Length: 260
Image 1 (spheres, one colour):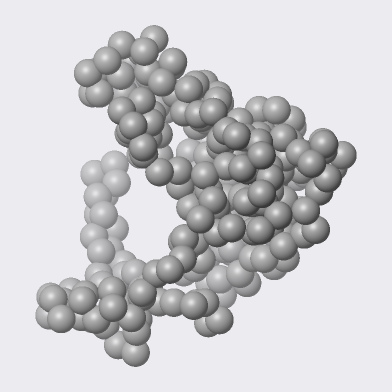
Image 2: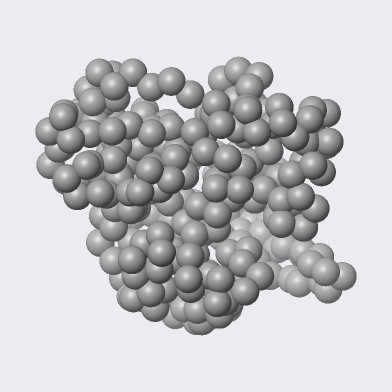
C-alpha cells in the first residue's frame, strides 16, 4: 500500500478518525508509533514516517504508543483484489491456520501460490506473513496483559505462542519490556477484569456509528433463550468447540460511557 505522506500528515494534525487504522505514524525522535487519532501533540513533519500497518511499523524498529494503543485501531479496509487477498490471508492467520498448517495451506485455500501470496501480503502490509503474524500475536498479548487478569502463561498460549519462553523473549526483544510490566491499567486502557474467567475489551470503530439503531435491530430479531437486548446492551450465549472439547459462555456488547 502506497501512502501519501502529505495527506497522512494532514490527517494526523486534524486527528481525523476516518484514517484511524488506515495508517500509523512513527516518530523517529522517540522510536514510537501511533494511530493518527493519538491525543499527544503532533510531531514535526520531518520526524514522521508513515506505515500501512502496525506490523510494518514494528518491523521498522518502532514501539507502540501506550496512550493511543495501536492494537485497538480498526482494521484496514479491503479496497482491491490484492488487498482483499491479503486481508483474507490475514483473517486465516487470526484463526491460527499459519501456525497449524503453514503458508502453503493458506495459499491453496485462496487458490494461489505461496509466492503470489507473499507478494500480495507485502504490497498490502509492508511485511512478510510471518512478521505480520508475530506482530498480531504480540499485540493481542499486550491487550490481554493490559485488559484482563489472565496469568502471563495463559496470555502466551491464548495469543498463539507455543512456548512461554519464546513469548517472553520475543516480547522483550520487540518492546523492551517484560510481559509482567504491562500489568495494571494504562493510559487509554480499560481496567483489569475482576476475574480471570471474565474478559472485557473495548472495541474501536470509525464514527459515526448508530449503536441505538443496531441494538434495536438485533432486539427485534432476537432468538428467545439465546439472545436478549436490554437497556442498549446486547447479550447472547455461545458454544465453541476447541480441540474436541466444548466450551460454553456468553458475550455482552454495549456502547462505552462517553462514546458518541
